Length: 214
Image 1 (cartoon, helix red, strand yellow):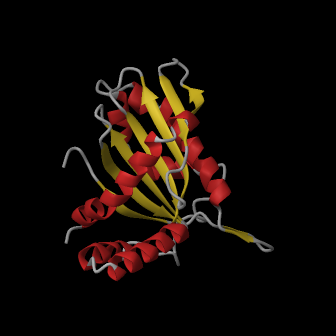
Image 2: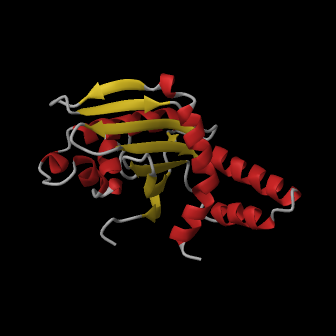
């Protein structure tokens, strides 16, 4: 089965739960920053799952919908998949269990610590999954080793803030947020990571990318 089909099938249940959780916690959404021209807004959203450690929403006055960016702890995500596999299998829902098993094949907790997902949310609040990128954000020195979640959160906010006044999107003749989604997010994340890591410290793997041109 194609990765795109697998990703879409495997995330159906998770996204449905996330939508319900977001709907019940709208009052916890907080404005972080506005763009220089005051047209763009960055919001922090409450995490919808135990494995999601940060979520950000980017809006722009002249654009339809928004951009949703989430940061997941891969170890916790992997635990969730294990739990879902056991639960579905115990109920006899082998097809559902197999769906989660196939998702686990795209999770390598020995090489990567966090997963960044990016969605383009349209006016009807339908989420179009555009990027899934796994990263190794652990920090290691001669005397300590850290999983890196705190730094990863700060890095994600740095990335989202940069999207508020991005020169390429500003110069685009089309929709501002659409222009953000067409950027190379690996390049953008590596740029946002400069204050936190040297490029040799972090590695990544693109799990999924949906291009509107394809």
